[in-house]
Amino acid sequence: MELRAATPEDIDEVRSVARASLSSSYGHALDEPLLDDVVERWYDADELGDDIVDPDTVFPVAVADGAVAGFAESYVQRRRERVGEIDWLHVHPDYRGRGLGSRLLEWVEIRLREADVASIEGRVLAENADGTGFYESEGYELAGEHTVDIGRETFVERRYRKRLSTAEATRRESYETEDGETVYIAFEESDRGSDAPFYAVYSDEEHTERYGYLCGACESLRVAVDTMDRIECQTCENRRRPTRWDAAYL
Image (cartoon, rainbow, N blue to C red; front, side):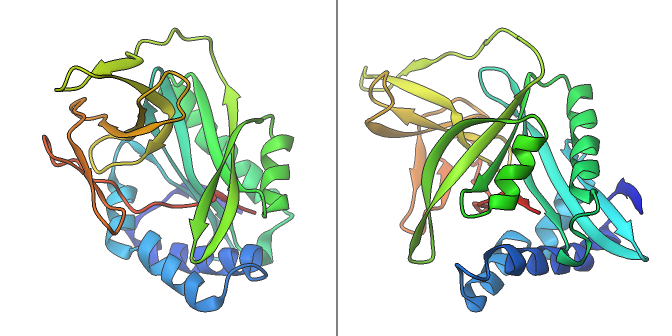
């Protein structure tokens, strides 16, 4: 088995691994048409190509028997500190149990350490016992839970974190709106944007009353959300990339 950086020529096989992995992990909870839709929206060939050639993205593949058998993608988010976020980690069902997930994670962690992140985070649905067990066995601690809607169902998503340093937080925790209202930023709640993350904004310090989003690219609070749940900064046109649930399908 070989580990290497992904290339544009791997895109079709990466999509195939994602589909097989999703079906194996969630075929009991999600129907096939929904899984097909997930692959088309979240593993779009053009977007994968952009990610693979992006120098700020860590995108290894595991090759076995001449084909891609697993892959991972991660990148650095600037919150109150530098955080390495694992977007996904998939292993084809035929190759599970052989340590591919651990080797892919090791590759990702090495590159993120080189990028001087303070911690690494991954998200996984509680439905995926193998995925939650994987993070726990790799030294990650449960850092939080929230619910996500998939189709017409609601699931619990768990966020796991591994601390790498005790770097000091440098991001502002509160901002003032144009109307003079003080709002509070939850840097641990973020959505990946085309240029920078979007961070959840609340009207209270306890983070119970949602206000909107802060654009990580220009620090503007002028962020619009449409009826299709698309997010766009009205100041710099940073846009939210498609939401992806469950980074670990092992």
